[in-house]
Image (cartoon, rainbow, N blue to C red; front, side, top):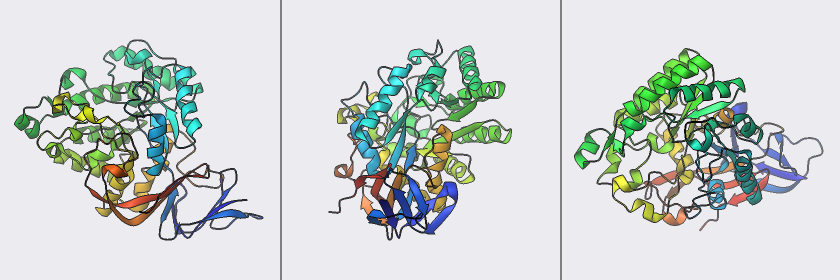
Length: 428
């Protein structure tokens, strides 16, 4: 006994499926048939997907559910619920929680909390250094055995180059993936906006492009020295993308992602101190935005992520430089990516691959595809649905987004996790 999803346009980039066909799921929550059922299959439920896109559940490489430590902003339960409402079934949580994810117990706590709610699954990223202090290496082998899918110091810089080298050597010896956020703390200083005409006009302290590229150059040199597999997170500048492209051409095992908002917003969207546009790294120039889009088109970028950071309303009410950076991005991840399809930058299968198979490959988990035997994590969305983002449509506890009032097309109607229907859009 199981479920059949009928009449939908199935797009599964990992298996090069792009056709109107049926999908068959067994009672244990696995895919058992594509196009035709296995012998003896009987369905207890049929889900009509006519006119809808059926694809693997989305994989988001960076989401901060705020638990543990900042539960007044959001919780694992609230943000997992928001994730499935956006078609996202797999999330990565950076280690900058409180306490830090630098012990197996903390890694297991995050996973167990996610299992308890039975919605989106959360994979923790372990700390590169103890307490993210940048001084002593964390026990990466133990964290790997506890379920961490990669290692990072999050937004805390490792300024000691020798410590960074030792961390990359440790990771390389166990073939672990490191996630790097290149940012020079001295060049960044107290900056809060891209160093350019807008920051100058508004009198805001600027963050130059070099704050990103200086550390990126150091890290690329160490990656070449150690042979580690590395993933650069949320690169924001044209020069940084060129450097990664050159490293990939030399055969270095490096990949990168961009955040959805950096593909649609620039420094000019700050307007007159719009704190919803205060993000790290900052929104950069139109030239940088075009370079990021071109890198996505050419395959230099392997994933688009939300960098979801929910905040309470007070966090964005301070003056721009004193406000807390970050966007509540889960529920705009898919629609912002679909806008790239509208702009003819990507085909629909290419866009879905950037949200499913490719990010899943980066963290090395068996998700992001719907092949026979795969866990039935499935997203259904209506590609023709037009809707406007308003606060009442946000399931996340954080309503801090610069995209309120934007009109989108493509809306998630159903999400299944392990074959279980965990979200169904209620039409009003």
